[in-house]
Length: 463
Image (cartoon, rainbow, N blue to C red; front, top):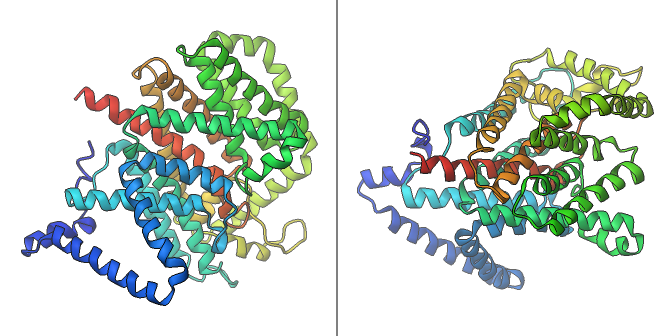
């Protein structure tokens, strides 16, 4: 258990209230009553919407408090399906996760008087990354260059990308207390991904199916995690009937057909997924490693070489961009230039003779530019802790779904780490894919959180 973070002073308002002789539960009741009265007053002014929104909102909050996993599932699907985009590109995905996390934290405060987390090894780097991002935001207000910094709305949006991702990770890790919820969200994502591939292969159906996938819902992380979850279950879940394994393998093959044959120019659609499949085969048996080394290394090298050659201009310009961003970072390599800011400084450094705005197309270069080497350190620490947790869990969880889930997430972990180097957004940049990319970039954080939930389930039993 996390003893060092057992009690955070800034969240101990209820403990302070008791020390001064107040009843915190009574305070909460008065706060709720006051909120209802205030809402009633507003309803008197704006009756058309709030008469319906108030009871619906209260009912949704009560449902999500009682069944948080349902709340997350509805948030994930709602964000991908519902064509809603708020100011700056905010989606239901971000709003829903922040709302659910707020309910969870508030519930802990009311019930325990403080906030407690399960695993120090995982939570420390996650919280450290958030602290560094906030410090980077403060540093971003300094005039590092004689150029306009990003608007505050963009900087806040950049911060919320980190906050939402970590919130989803911690929320799943603490609120998914039963494996059935992990299983439900896993199968939903696999089937939802399979439906998308059907829409690609059959254009007549695709005209209708495409309406279920909004902008940003099918970025690289979507393709990667559909493959890794489906292939992991097909390969490691011994309790699955052969028929269901065949269905899962068909989904995997359809995904690669669409990604490589129909859409091969988009390398991010199939390369991370292929890395995940190779990783899972190696985890299944090291003998696959010998087979890949003997029979597959030359085709694999040719495949990568052809991928690079077909997009040589893009890769060469990215190298130029990294070099320029490296020069920009020198102004503050420790904490970076703040979320989103470096994009506004790039015109000061000409790229191939042009003074234009551009981004790095690399997750790790972006992290340094926005949060400095401290941010990159915290991010790598967090990823390493998640990977080590999955490795420790692989032989501890029960056979069947849980074992296949852990192995699938390990494959997805390797693919996600690699995808960041390709410029695939695990933490979307506001001036590239934008906040709408959170619709699918949230997937690795949700399934990484599942490892934290399984750790709590199995390691608590041994204590």
